[in-house]
Image (cartoon, rainbow over all chains, first blue to last red; front, top):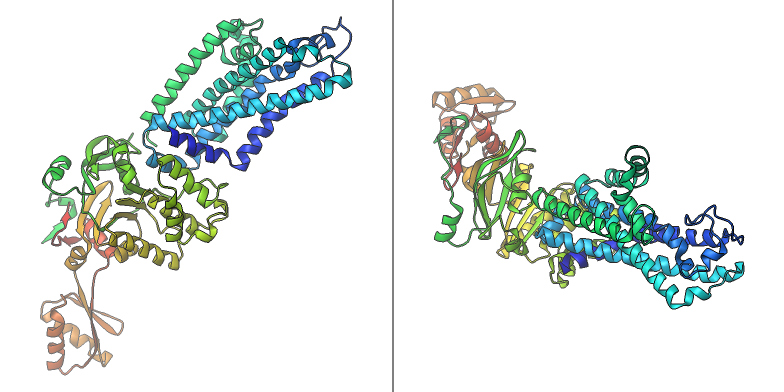
Amino acid sequence: MWGAFSSEWVKLQRRSMLAWGFGAGLFFPLLATILTIERAVRNPAFTGGHGHGIRVTYAVLEQATGLVHGVVDVSSLIGLVSLCLFAAAFSLEYSQGTLRNLLVREPRRARFLGGKFLALVLFVGLIVIIAVGISVAFAFALAPGKGISTAAWTSSTGVNDMLQAVLHAFIAAVIYGVFGAALGVLLRSPAVSIPVAVAYFLPIEAIITGAIWSGGSNWLPDHLLVALAHGGNGDSTYSHAAVMLVIYAVAVSLGILALFRARDA
Amino acid sequence: MGRTCDTMTVELPHIDAAGALATSAVRPIVASRLSKRYREVLAVDGVDIDLPGGVVGGFVGPNGAGKTTTIQLLLGLVRPTSGTATVLGESIEHPERYLRRVGALIESPSFYPALSGRRNLEVLTRLGRLDKSRIDEVLALVELTERANHRVKTYSLGMKQRLGVAAALLPDPELVILDEPTNGLDPAGIREMRGVMRSLADRGITVLVSSHLLREIEAICDHLIMIDHGRIVFQGPIGGLLDAQQTGLIARPEHAADLEKLAALCIAAGKPARIDGEVLRVAAPEEWAAELNRHAFRAGITLRGLEVTRATLEEAFFAITDTDTTADVPAGGEIA
């Protein structure tokens, strides 16, 4: 598996991968952090955007969780970056015709798949860590200018909340990645797998829960991933979201493995 | 021993892969009744192959004959519908047991365009946990050292093809399988590729090279496997195949006016002949050239040219696969 991991790492160092992965992965959290702080309102009675990241009060930002407020709100966008990254990494091997060369050098397909997956997990992990790191740095830089107190951010609770935000964003990104990898292997084309993935996780699931099955927000993956990133929300508790997502991830992973092993290259 | 192909009167002996291994030194490739069906299409139809070691084996057939599918079966990339095969003595059900000793170029060379040639080879070296020092060796062998650090998207098709061969040679293989390696190469590149393949064989490496360009195969191979419509129609030494094909004689009399008289002499001797411009083409073996010369001399005809023509591999292929044409079974070869 180390060979597949190490080999994938070379491919992930392509400029396009670095630019696209880190560019998109850093852009959304940074933008969310800047907008959250710059658009924060002092009036404590304001409730218009509370909890939705568009406009929050100073009081909300001055809590221990305020440091990563913006990051948490856009964790699903980091997840979408991960989704596209995994879908592209797997489907490009088919569409470029490189998969056959790779399987000649590593015919043990489970090891190949596992090594490649772990390399992508590490890559996404780095994106999440750097994204949160830069967002935190910007939050500390911008907050004093707006008169927002950062005292709670540096408390043990604040640090703990930040680490939890990193962990949740990372787990969510990995699970998004599992779905991306599945679509990449299934559809074998980035031109198909990425639009299908984005279409499902952006409008389609929202349409399903909004118009067809309102109870789906407690069972469908995108809603569960948002709940996970927020440590639980109105749709699902944290533990329910975590258990359901683990079940999804294991089932989808086993499905990918079975398909990849059984199908002709 | 003329045979029409549609009657299939000469059966290929069934090759038992396991038996072949038990009774002889390990053959690089042994396939027995290997078949692959894609829904309605039987791409490979009960193929038996026995490739001896140390040869440059040509795997020829028209586009769509089943060459690439057979190669993919041998490399464990696709699973057979039925039949068995061994590569370097190991079953194709366990490609991990032999692929470390096999190099392969499959169809068009596929690489990561944004990575350099060297980095592309590094991807494969790391994946196969191969010796990194091989990268420089194989780049030098295919003369890509100077362009090794350039991105593959800047390479010509010929350079990509050479990089593909370099990739195939990375594991220092005992068996190299090249699928259409001269595609996209200019004449100089084709000549270099022939040299590479010959040098591999000289080092004891068995090479199986597929191509639909029969002239290329004729120039570089000493063993031949012919496939058509998913079935092996011939396998054996290439020399035996060509020697067994009809040779012909071309006689050029000093005076064109003697052509008809010379043709009549040949026909009278039982050798079909036809006038083709200023020459007479006679369907006769090489040994009859002296006889023809004597006939012409006795009739007062002076020949200013007399040459023997041999069938090309292309002609031999069509002779075997054309159902209306008879083909001779050469010594050491088998026609199915």
